[in-house]
Length: 546
Image (tube, rainbow, N blue to C red; front, top):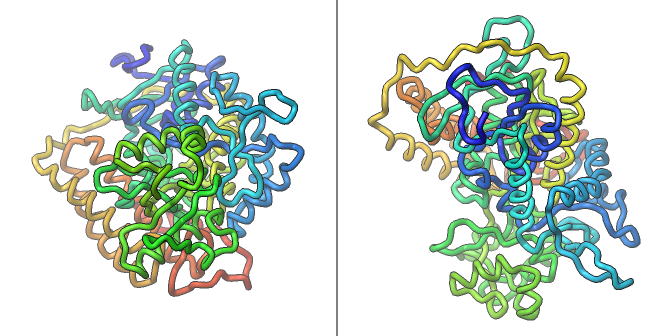
């Protein structure tokens, strides 16, 4: 196999097929590649993933004098608002340091400082929800450093095939082929450059496709975050959980000329103050932790102030720190804002909340296994139990690394006993034609993201959810009809997946009769303390067909 194309004949086969080129997918590929043939698919460029754009860092306990594993666990449980799986939290947090050390062996360089003994040590940031400094980072572009290092390693490995511009259309299971035993067999994959769809066989398929925040009008995520893996797993028969918990990052740059750009949590960790246009700090009205409260609280506070005062945005002010301090700690943010004539050392940054992270997803166990044997889910696409009702800052890349290693160990235990998938049926597009109505895709995409933002956003009501579902039902019919008539494209695949994800979010939100973590509804504004906290779990056969 070459590193860019899939041979046309015979039918392509890999031991492990990984959908997604972010931190989770590439870490797993590198773990496995010494023993197995691995393919990594990316919808667009290999760098077009949430990992590449992650600014803040990776949470891990390195300061043994002031911090502890128990403290990190406690902070995570508090942020998760009663829904974290405590065993999963302990597993993940306890592997933080070794995950960072593994990244260093892969060539990732982290920001250091001189310690009290004069020796170099990792510089640790503090972010919202954390009681101590424990964020390992590479300036304010940690994800970029991680992504580029892992891509370089993967490109150099002879057992890893990197397939950019390849999008999974559908998972192939034994059940779909009429076999009695349920097992993954491979996937139908769309080559975005040739427009052809091929079957690729694999003993193991891993979903590492990221989250679903492009279902909202405003998002900090790259365009790939269209919930593909969640929709694929759902259609294949996997359970999906806690989709009502969509995290809105409190501080996204508000500027008419700028693509959505995240202002890292670390800015608040280093003393950044949230203010109104008149300069008044407002977080004291919402939480004693002020700007360092968990993201759900800060995002709702900003949303409330914007609506109350009828303003477009609030402001994040770090200008009380010196220019040298700001340029050292936040070089990317400083230069990005300066290009828009915002000197953050002299003036506050206009910010608004934006959809940022999908806390729910495909239900997995501690080894990243889904309900279908041979199918794994790693990273933001999965619901492991780590985040509960609200992800704490910088626990996401940590989850990617830890569960990539968990999946690696489990795959090695079972892969030799899995039979080869055999030749798979090729994709049939004999009944479809080229579209002459592609405007339908853009219109439906726009409508979906707007009503999700308006009705299923930071603050919800029963009526808003009902309105969203009514509109969704109409869109589902249109999209299904379009998909059945015309040849597929990347935009159509994303739209088809997004409409499923939107329905999963709405249904989960309708089922939760309380406010908890990231799910806030005016009809049930209090958290239910009378009953044990429950995950919202949807089962395809029992809920609805897609």
